[in-house]
Image (cartoon, rainbow, N blue to C red; front, top):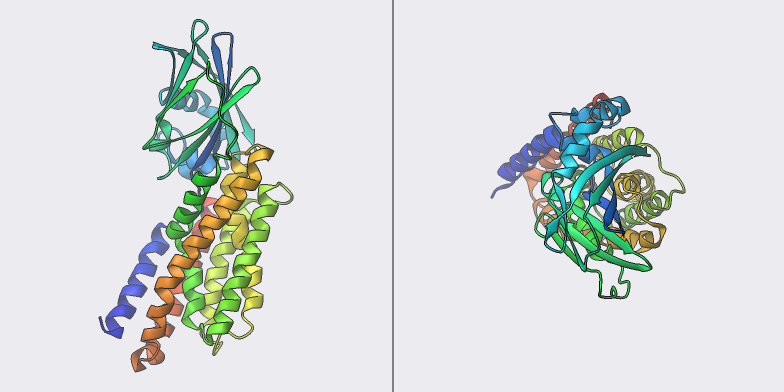
Length: 357
């Protein structure tokens, strides 16, 4: 593939993703299940943005921050969940009932009650709703009965969970780590805005040591704000963070026209890394993970983001280094790509301001 064609492909891909990329949604929901006297009490916490996108007939996706829209469709939301979350005690199905809804920051908590008719040795939870949500959605389940607590994770490929109530639960093994590790990888690989930001850095990433410093500063910064947000120390609204992420992309694209290399660029990437970290942390905050789960979830998700980022850089850096040696690239290629990145950032900024996310 010659440089002219490669440049065209890169520009086209950036333009296409700019029209479709939206605010960040990491597919996590949390379920607290309590078994007592033949009844299963269930509380499920979702990110409102993700739940809204799964209910196009009841709530417009842009209404994720419109609490009145959720209130108006309270019963529709309850029906949607009860149709996709079935419970059986032994071989007998339990009768579901919607118990209410409450808002929790950027999240939404739904209460359900399953009447099972009496004691049972085994409970089966058939969670089909992850298949209707974000690709790769994970439902983190904690089931409590007396002094015992079982933990498991449901997904589109693993919807049926079985809990042997007569068997003591295994020792706690931080079940959130593996799902969050995978989600971190998926999030960066499908996070077109984060990827575009990294691409913008690479375009003028010489000398290599300065590029490494810029990316390291970005990584350290988003790790800090990811932790601040996850532990509820400080968490700005997505309505502020998401447009700021878009602006950071536009800035890098425009700045590429005026900086000869990456020397000293770590300062601005550290600042933007703080902003991107709040974007990464959204779902961890929205589903209000139990305090005991936050360290493992935080470490797993952040590690996944870093692994995904390294994989992307491992593919892009050699490619950019190869084409940088050509006359076509030095004359027009990097300028066309940088300008397209800047335009994509502006498009996302306007789109996110209009949608309120």
